[in-house]
Length: 341
Image 1 (cartoon, one colour):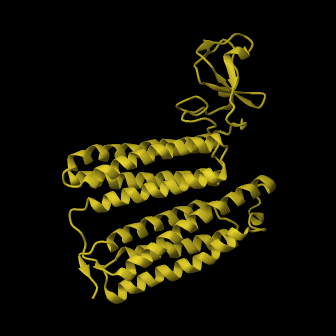
Image 2 (cartoon, one colour):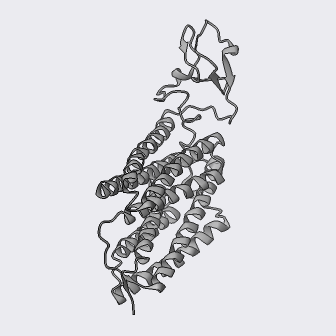
């Protein structure tokens, strides 16, 4: 049963990272408002593909909650009814949570796929939570944290709704991102805690303390990166997709983010050389250093080569993978199976 639990936890982790990738693509393509309502999309479970589907139609059966666009505003059906030749505004109410009333089929379907991936990721989480009740006597933390993960996914879905309702308020996007990292951390803990056999890493207090610093630094870098991305979004609104001008006037946050990247390399490099010198056995540090190298390359590409295609989502996703690896190494560093003397 514990082995099955761990398999579903690993599946959930992969799907959560796919959700993060989908979210990064949504941000890159400007598709965040592709579905202006939540949880449906223009009132449909399967979104429209043509603008004509969002126009008023005479003698048409409308379901409650269906959305149309009229006079650059969203109108929502207040009940089930069949329309007459002319629109009767008594059957409709204006959508008041925001005033974004644009239909772009590409944006709509990119955002819809993001939501669909999010819904799919909840399935293995629900399954391993159910399985965890059979493991209650063996490890109560597995059950309690599994339940917390389900609650976290529900909260994350609600945050997604508030992001849409606020027309992509920057601080809500940041909270949404941080919550995704919390969910990744909880699932990683479940994967680690449900292991049947632990590796023989050597416990080293100095290594454990520095990996905590590395984790906090990664968290700060991701938050700063999200804020820099918001600056780019504002530049796009002002000047359009002239990529060479997006970073023509960087904010202070950009320079802090870039300076911290040197600290990231130094701290994680110290962890790498310490585990190799002392034979601590933290083999995932090799993958971590590879991610840091890829992160540097993608960052250089964005700044000096005018944001090549997919460079932004790649930069974000690698940062989140780094965070996940660091957190798992931290979990390994707490396991006092052997002690450095």
